[in-house]
Length: 359
Image (tube, rainbow, N blue to C red):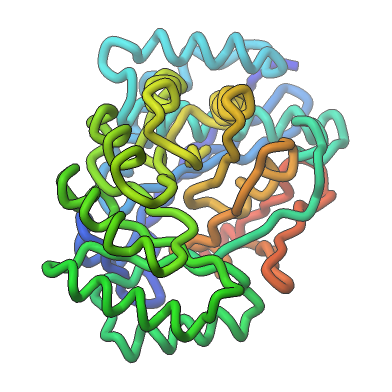
């Protein structure tokens, strides 16, 4: 089968509620970039990526002007070969950033197309470990009032979640501690509670925060400092008192390799929409397994449920605030804190194109 065409679209998706964290500030919309990879037999694979509000049009233009021309008439079953071709074609201007988000979207579309032709669900084609995956509710809630934060937590409990994540990184560490303490008191000790600083701290402040929160039974501290500071992550994990989750802003397997080798992470956290797609994500999962580490996910939970279901070293699936439930025909459902990978061919995601195009 050969690639006949690649259709690319861009959408600005309004968020149902304003979201806030320590680095991106106030977020009222996110950008969705979709690709439809079509073969010469009339089949189609869907891929997509997203941004937190900027750069989406540039990603779309990269696909249209630089990636699409080199893939037309190529064998769509040779995904590893096509990934390498895209990577080296854009290597000089990228090695990360926008090119890797573009590659991710195409790679996801190619895997969807391949699995549909095999008449196999993605999670089974990738290995097929267990369809059921533990899920947590990921709040983007730094500037919510304490009452609003507790109300959100109560809603997540009512919806069956057994694990919750909240943002930290307010101006005063004492404010963070009060808010985390109140959420822990509401949850009790039987719920897992994660906290996420979104790169907002220096290494020294992150170590201090890790020690401060240690008595609150925190499951992990996520992204305490900037992703470039690998040695800083090693210090935070070794001098602090909490396991570290990190990697949502990494754009290659090599960054994960360096962080793991330096002992800077307990829960590697690749995002399939920005790390290089399914091809790279699975390699990162294998790297983590070789180092006896469990993988978590970031964003695009409708895709990540397949990836976590396919591997033996999964931890938690993040149910992300940038969900596409209103624009997907059969969005992922959570029951008693468990997500189940669907058995439809490919990844099973079908967009409501009319609704997207009406935004």
